[in-house]
Length: 623
Image 1: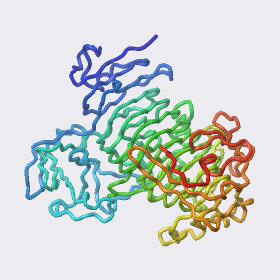
Image 2: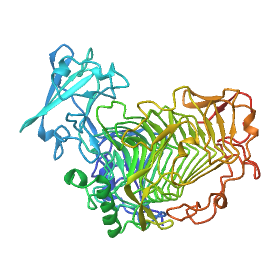
Image 3: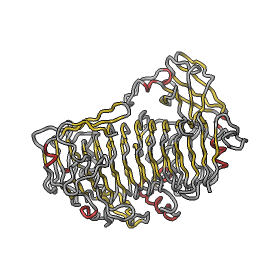
């Protein structure tokens, strides 16, 4: 039996029946009425509310669907329009709002804080001020509103002179902003007032679909792995969500969160700094397991075809709650754009415990870090992703024991791979940047039983135990090691172009079928590497509107590598977890198609992401 369809319109009333003829006014009113199997269709307009689903569906076949009406633009904002600005001097204006304006939550009293958060020695509020959709820069000094100076750490120093400052007392909140030559009463000025746009208050709201919305302007709090992770759009420790075809932007911290609950620990390291953060997180994992953390209770989400940008912490993040999920065909960019604060959770995609997670065909750029898999990436597959213009790295794998598979990716930034893990398999990738190889001997992190959250043991990271088959390594123009790359606290860390950076690791490296260009160097452990010595080759990224192309120039070496198909049988088992590289259902895997989905040769596949691209210069559309 089909469920009911509830309609929402800006011309509706919340006491109407929700039919197409008599729609409700708010999405929240529809959420309160919706039952498993129902569909909430929201019509064009701007909805300024925090949608807090009180319940979810019962199964994948009987879910609750929230959808924008086909062909209509539906915007959910965590902000309110503010008028009544008074000029202070020049381009500086101020507005005074009674604290009752904010209800039970005032983002201009709430400071961003939490584990692994770096405030750069100054306070930061979860509130934000927007002028015609653009976020202004917060300052903690009123003088910096009166006389703003360009911030040299900002990617856009001139934009950083559009500043705002706030102060509160018992009754009122005062906001000052430098709008330069703009009159805020004649322009659209909005301020964050809600901590989220779509996020259930209670965990366990399962089987919800969120489709086709534009969501922006949320006063989100810092979302580390040891805290409840509240995103602009988040699942809150639930199961079976589908988040698709949304446009997510301007979150003070995280865009989409697939993270954990508060009951298993909330900023536990900040509350007890006597123990290391890694020890605290291991305790969080134990509490989560005791509370039922498993495939049956959380995860198995589908996150696809979303556009996510202008978030100051992460595009997508999740601690423990993203297990068994698929994250595909998302465009994530402009993450950490203002750079007024920092911390260890900043990336386009940041997951802890990516157990049996598929990360495929995403475009991630200008995101500081691209993809960051931190702790317990096991059974994970990272395939067919396009990463470029990320200034820290494209892929950071931190303290994982594997098995995880990275194949058919384009890693085109200055740093392609930051590897502080072991047990990874890398096949048919294009590495245009450096590789950072570092053991991690001071942290013991979990590995799991096959396709399960059950912890099998803890181990340190000796490094390597990796497989590299049929990849392309192309050295860039800068030196292999510079002051920024070298970590004096860890002298065993090695940075450079190619696999030679693994030569000093304790565990063996398994490598064959790779090609090295422009001075990139193979490992001494590698079998029959092909090193191009005469011809300079390269790859350049070309953005043309919404499309992305790569200009590919490779020499005759492409046909000289002695490659073999990459399969479960070839990859073997990892040293620590003693598990094979296989599909999530336990069946054997094979890297038998390329970046575009074309079938690879069953006997001698072409190295790199593209099967038979040819040796001449070619321009390929990759997005």
